[in-house]
Amino acid sequence: MTTAAAKHTALSAKMKLNPQEKRLLAACCGLPEGKGVPVGQEWKKVARSLTRKGLAWTMESIFMVCIATDEGRAVLAEARPS
Image (cartoon, rainbow, N blue to C red; front, side):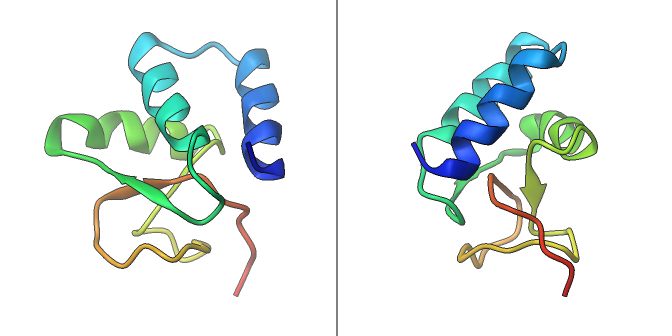
């Protein structure tokens, strides 16, 4: 687990997350920093919720730092202003 994944896992333990949010966050935590998991239409609401809570970033975010190139990925990574 990367440092960012460990940090976000600790943060998520302090927040109230629904089962879908926990599942998507767990999928992201298993990846190296900057990598993502594909998010289908039914998961976009969950990804947005994690984004609002500061636990995930998506390709739509202007503060996104990731290697992923296709839109619609939930990405666990450090956010850095450009």
